[in-house]
Amino acid sequence: MKKAVLLLVLIIGIITSSFAQKVYSVDDAYQADIKIFATDYDYQADLLVHKVDNDYQVSGNKGLWYFTDHDYQADKKVFFTDYDYQADLKIFFVKNSYQAKWREKAKIHLLY
Image (cartoon, rainbow, N blue to C red):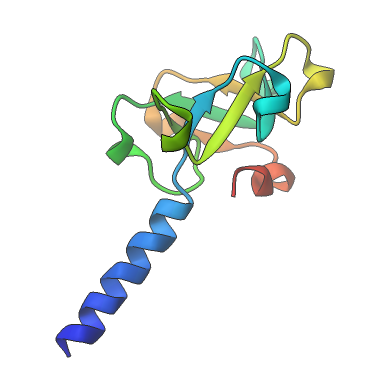
C-alpha cells in the first residue's frame, strides 16, 4: 500500500512539474523554444501572464510564469520579439494572479 501511494505521489509530481511555467528569457531568437511578443493591451494577447516571485507559485499551464536565473532551470526558453508578426505567441502582463488565463486556447500547446 505504501508503495502505491508513493508511486501515485511521484506520478502527480512529474505531471504537475511538466506543465509548470518556468521560463528563461534568451538574448537571441535561435536560442528560444518560443518567440513572444508583449502586447500593449490585454485584448490583443493570446495569453494573459502574471509574473510570480517564486517557482512554487506556478501550477499548470495557466499563465503564471516564474522567470528563472538560468536556462537549465526553465521549462521553456523564450525570446521577446520587437514586432507581433515575428511572434509565436502574444502575451499581456497582468498585475494579479487571478487575471492570468488563456484567451486563445488554440495556442495552448505552445507551452506544453
